[in-house]
Length: 157
Image: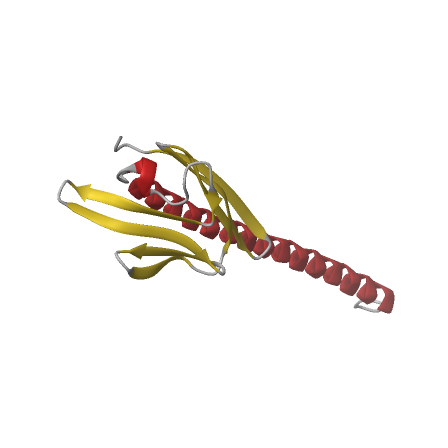
């Protein structure tokens, strides 16, 4: 009797090994794909939430809402312009607008980028004297997309 493996036994072992390796590689690929999808979603959610919170904070404290906010009552635009009341003696002219895939912020003429490269759409609607809506703020990164809406009640009545 000879010691060792026959050709058939060796081929079976190699086939099983390749099947196991193929299965492990597919599981790892799916794990990495899932991680990147979750990561993209978390990134755009955080950006959207940060931008919405900032805009809400400043719009809530805008002055003279009946005449001082553009768009006017009943209008919907891709920008909003208003006067922010920091305190009784200090105000700031502010504007948020979409520029390509970016959300821009202007404070007293100084422009900065609030969201870069991921903004698909944003609409501001001045519903009434003291209500502004941020509608359909959509961000996309890779295949992942998120849309947020926010209703803001202005405090300085």
